[in-house]
Length: 179
Length: 115
Image 1 (cartoon, rainbow over the protein chains, first blue to last red):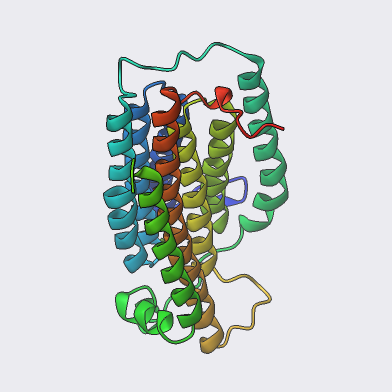
Image 2: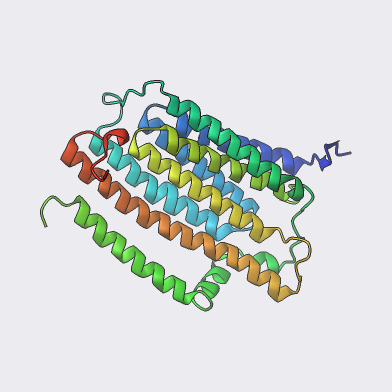
């Protein structure tokens, strides 16, 4: 019933994944390729949404929701605010001349992709997800995340809270004209 | 999703990471460079979650081990998100400060720290 191409069975799930992943990849290219900062930001928002969908397919429901709230809600709004404040939208585009740096960068990226992909991907085409029992499927929900975060990972959690506090103070210090 | 091999997720993560690297090298606007850094962080998050969901062969598959490794991947993603939020707040503050000082945000003209 299912076709096999190059040792990989083509299942409906794989086609679905291909559609989502392809759209995410196109948006990732759009972030780099668009000259206008606002268009790049909107491409990034779509990309983050599609990644949240992929997190849901990986049984990480809590993190999918966190992705939408933190990235598309908070971080992208911050980006768009700065684009608006600096007025980088339409009128003040940095005109990017064709220079050798661009060519070298793209070549380097292709090289990185080919080298890493050739080393990593062939070993992983056979690895399929483990079957989830109903109680194991709960390990992506808020309850399991909260329980683990406040028991095993409580020291890193406290360290992160200090980091965020320093981040708040530092960004106010940087952005304020006079203290 | 049950019919998707691990390589598909890793390939998407690899592609997004490479796109981010190319963007950091190629682009001149510091805001777009920050967006590319976010792209790289997100591809790493996707890779963590994929490896948390797919257990490799040769892994001692007791229920405790499986639960522990699933939670470890998700915890790493939470910490990466927190670091990304702090980094974006401070980085955009720096860009604002530089813009106020120089009235220009071309990354190639920022060489104050050059020795």
